[in-house]
Structure formats: structure tokens, C-alpha cells
Length: 131
Image (cartoon, rainbow, N blue to C red; front, side, top):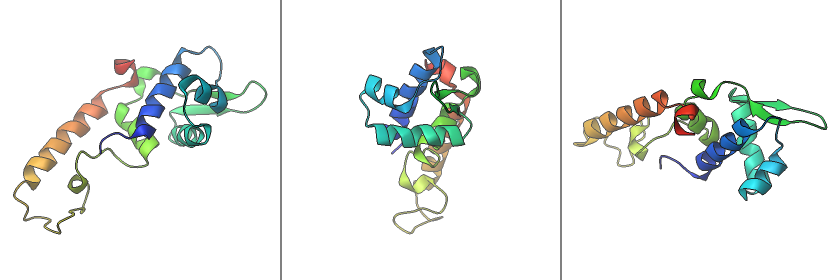
């Protein structure tokens, strides 16, 4: 599956964060977006670990964008939220053929070509492009 709720919540959160003049905490975001706080907090921490967000501590702490929206690729956001690169099909990840037919599958070239096009598209698309 290309995108899960984690990616959706990451993108929604980044939209709210980019519009804010001050850091926003996970609890405020969770309330505003109607997302379970514990799930969202994990996503936000992953975004911070990947350098997409900056986490600020203290009474007025929270999250802010660590980069300009035009510098953050959608692919990077998905990777941070999901913990892996986006894959259209299970078999398009390296050495992951559910049928055990790596190298002999008739549709493998098509699937790999399709995945490459998706990867190129998501790498070239920025947060600024979609918001």
C-alpha cells in the first residue's frame, strides 16, 4: 500500500504546523485534527528524527518546520511517517517477491518501471506543491 493513515496524518499535521506562527504541541494537533494523540506523537517524533520538523521543549514548546516547504519532498515525508519507502506493490521492494519468483516473474519489469515512475514523482513533489 502506498499511503497509510500515518502518511495522511503526517501531511495533515505539516499543513497545520506550516500555517502556525508558533510551535504547536502534539496534543493541540491531535485535538484539532481528531487524531489519537499517542499515534500522532509517534509520527511527529519520526518527522523530527528525519529533519522535517524541529521539536522545541518548554512551556511554549512544540513542533515547527525544520525546512522550507519547497525543500521537503513528499517521498521524504512518507518515508519518515511509514518508516520505509513507499511501495505500490509488495514485490517492488528489494528482494520481496511474495511468490518467490524473483527474476522470473513476467510482470516484474512492468512493476519495477511503474515503481520507478512513482518514486520519481514523489521525490520531485514537495510539501509546498501539495499545500
